[in-house]
Image 1 (spheres, helix red, strand yellow):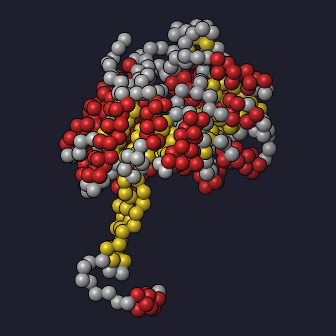
Image 2 (cartoon, rainbow, N blue to C red):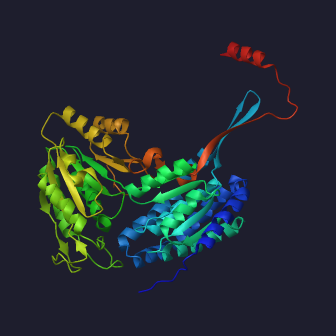
Length: 483
């Protein structure tokens, strides 16, 4: 079925988009925050609420299961809540009165931001990327050639009317569909481009990061995740098992789902049994069917490679491990994969298996069970395991002991987002939806609020014209006398 058609831009059109964005950014960055941020966020929230069902439908046409599409759009609703808006507004402008001065700490726009969303989630990633605009930037968005319609339709339907209403200059938002390699080359070479926001795999992302730095441009990377879920001995095991089942959403083809669990040996058997029951209950289906969470996986060879490597290193396949047809029948040539749970005994050598060391992007969840030890030793191992992960998108903990929770929160440095006793994938304002450390975000990785990542801190001090000022030395003496 064809949902719509999108024209492919030639190189001249792509370069024109960069020039138009550069011209528009000069005007837009000087527009007051009351217009380019406050009005934008208010209108964006109204648009997301009004067109939410339409966006969900569009996502199902792109193959996203209905329940997954609803979850994706819930992230946009959280992004526009007042809690998020208030936080971001406070970061963009803070003002102080100091010694007769009007001192301002603000964030100024970087300029032109180019956004390359991923082929597996282009629509919502493009919407997230346009959050650079209320920071004072202009945007150029590449619509992936494999799924361009959702991006172009959503931006025209939601974002363009907002820009028209607040009087944005022409050229502020540009949407182009074209070959990714040549377009990225042009972005790197263009004197108009300041930032590049890239969603994709780690090898290509890190290469792009190096090229950006060499060219004097800011790389903003959203790469692979390999999230860890820790389950302590006093955890609510049913809720923890529910959260771990999120590993199979979209057949694991999402960056921010649980990718591995580390479970206290006292409760490992019980938790795995609960998890297996939930995994076996999942069924494939068509995207618009209620309750469907599994997506087709076009190539199974890498899944089989990960599975074979894990078994070779001592893992046990507890459930799954096969292909299946849409009716759930096992079939190695089917488009779907069974939700698969592995048990790996021993924490120290767990990363010898690629299924633990790296993101898999399949419905394949390894459950690591450390060797029995005292709780202090186990907790040390849990925290160290998270902090030595090569990736760092989201990490979470299930525990009742406040001291365990406090240590996890205080000592976990890996990850753009930490969750405790909560859905691993749920969005919640004002926390960011994306961003991470390590291989997830590159050398400059952190939690990603695009309006902040595409701006830079600037200090301003203003003294009213004609104001009498004491000599500097005298002011310092007076300050010291009062301190």
